[in-house]
Image 1 (tube, rainbow, N blue to C red):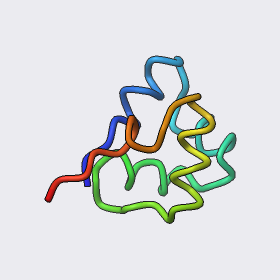
Image 2 (image 1 turned 135 degrees about the horizontal axis):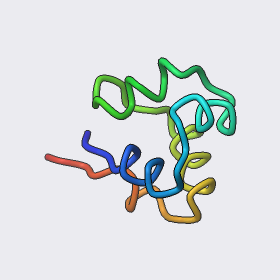
Image 3 (image 1 turned 180 degrees about the horizontal axis):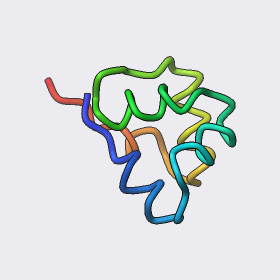
Image 4 (image 1 turned 90 degrees about the horizontal axis):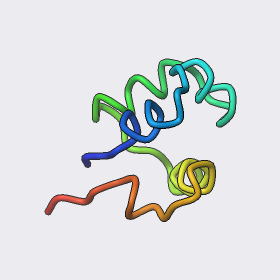
Length: 64
């Protein structure tokens, strides 16, 4: 699944570590998400969307 996490993070001027701290996950989780190697749980997806003030669909792009 593709995502806009890195774009949103950089738009806010956040480091991966700062975002990880805000979401209460590891920096490795953020790296894996940004590289598309890891798909988040629905709970984490909601937390990410809420943090950026957007919908899940605006962060994560589902490709069939």
